Length: 103
Image (cartoon, rainbow, N blue to C red):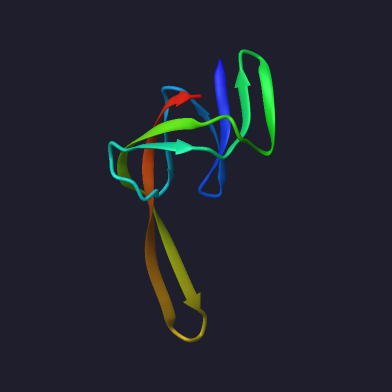
């Protein structure tokens, strides 16, 4: 089993070939192929490579499938004795990536 741990959008994500992942919004059009070059760890048939901090020779190719919004979060702020109540919502913009290959 081949997998890699990449640093993407401030998060470390465990990726495998042929699976899709929802990550923070990336400025790319759907259908574009992007390369993720901040690979921190690689496991290929029980042979491990650890970067210090990144592996320079390893690249993960991923295809942008679509852009979507995450789950809605409700933010409620209240100041007691002041009759101030504020309710807001937030939806994070996400990008769905399909990992095509780990080179």
